[in-house]
Image (cartoon, rainbow, N blue to C red; front, side, top):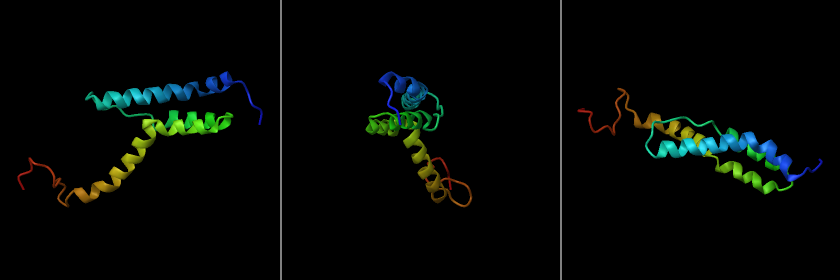
Length: 101
């Protein structure tokens, strides 16, 4: 595979850098108490990882794992599997302090 100048890889990574930055901005906005906005699921991280795997410096592909869309997606899957145990058969939440039953 031919090796190009460093700027070629940066140009190829620009869409991924955009999505990566937007996911971090959305994550910070959600943490600071603003209304909830959904992230683009790991698109920026995957794009950056693929471009870095094409470049001569392959270990930079690990930067793709720092995309919040990547690990928030995995956390959401674990939370979804945990949900049915917390909800009682009548549909009420056992941890709800306002529930009189």
